[in-house]
Amino acid sequence: MINLCLVVIATQFSETKKREIERMAAERARRRRQSRSSSTATSVQNSTAGCYDELLEFVSYLGRFFCATNCDIAAKRLYYTGIKYAE
Image (tube, rainbow, N blue to C red; front, side):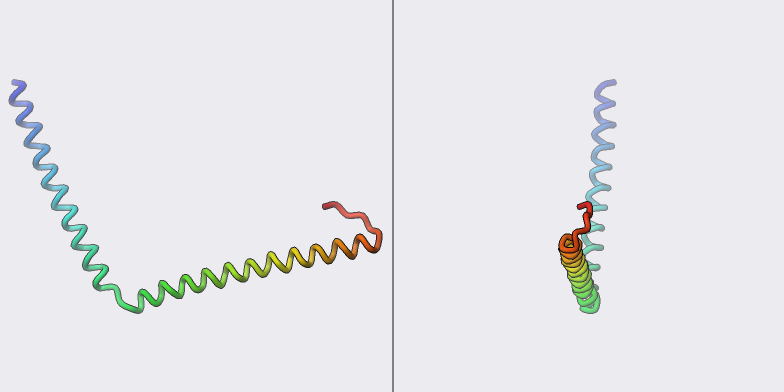
């Protein structure tokens, strides 16, 4: 009885392994087709997305810079006029 159970388990394992290997091979083939079929327009679009990200980062940097500069100027003006402010 135990031998029969072991044979059934071994057979199921073998079939499962075979299915998984076939699935992985199909996935690899699909990925190869996708990488070959990607056009240069897609790669240009991806590089411009990076450009937009960089531009957005720079604009946010400028906003933080000007805000900090204006806050410092306003604080100095308040200090010189004698008005108390909370930091």
